Length: 236
Image (cartoon, rainbow, N blue to C red):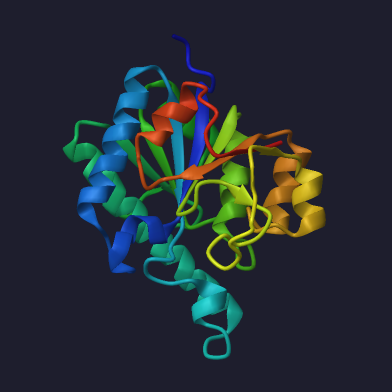
């Protein structure tokens, strides 16, 4: 059966990699995510990945009032590069060729981001991990994920989170919160729903990029979304 989405950008939060530890890595979980991606590649999917840095450092949150914003954000970019290196190594251990591309020049860590080269890697069956966000402070990794997705011509963005979709309110605080199966970008912005930040949401809307929000707790959900199963919330 043909995949519903052939080329995708998966956005994974740094916290998801940490599991219940809260920081660092749950290596068993990271391994299961990589295995699911490997299975998707075997079905013909082309996959780029953006990983947040929250398992080590969240720029504006951790640095607020203590470290100047630009420096705090750059520290967050470095945290994403660390995550790309770790996940790329796990990919290689399970037999997947993974390349790290960074939005800043960091010799020995990854190649400088180049759109044409990234697309070439994807077309040859390699996973591309995009590190260091957009390379600029004041922009989140959500925005970086949408930007990279637009650049590589992705069919969709898979937003893998610790929650299983988009809700009318935070379900951890409001037991009456309702999960949406589908929602428009304009509604997300109007209701200020915490799907992605407003910059990322507007960029996705302007480029007609659908976003599927789903729980990464079960890594096989990546395959289920690619196969077209109605999982989580479709934002379009």
